[in-house]
Image (tube, rainbow, N blue to C red; front, side):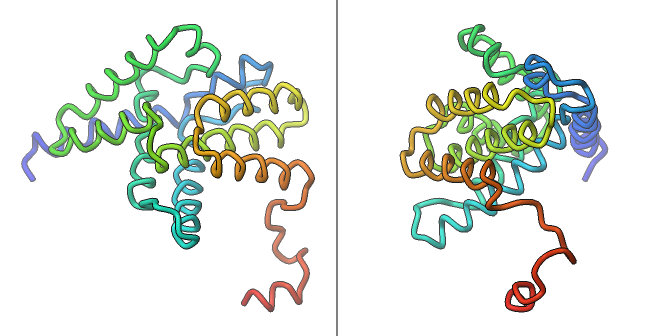
Length: 211
């Protein structure tokens, strides 16, 4: 690899570091303190991990879905925000699509020196359009991650939180089965039928059966 190509890769990598410190502004608009809002990087990691795991399970159940493609869409879905910063859902709606174009252009500039820039832009565009099941799985994970962040924050307005994620799902996730699965997930979490893994506190027999 020559220095020019390596420099292009390193430019992306260095820019991504910024996302570790970028707060998710949607939470700040809802009254969260800075230490209660996660970063763009933390959010992206959670979304990418869950998107892939969910896609793999759906594939096992017979869904026509490509987990590898889902993973790649998730990896790049918020990359433009390393340049533009994060803007909340309602603010984006007020911009009437203008901000999406700005973020798209920012993404294009960031990957301009990549040999596979067309492929990367295609993943980003697919998430923006939200027509494929893969992109909607990523949006599912995106909304669920936002909900969980708020649900685990004592000062959060739970009613506002529910209204926000329902607003997102209604407008963005058109696949009815996926939408229903999202609401089932909300119920399992809010009713505390599933919680964070507690290791040694869990039932010993259940752990042994799992092993």
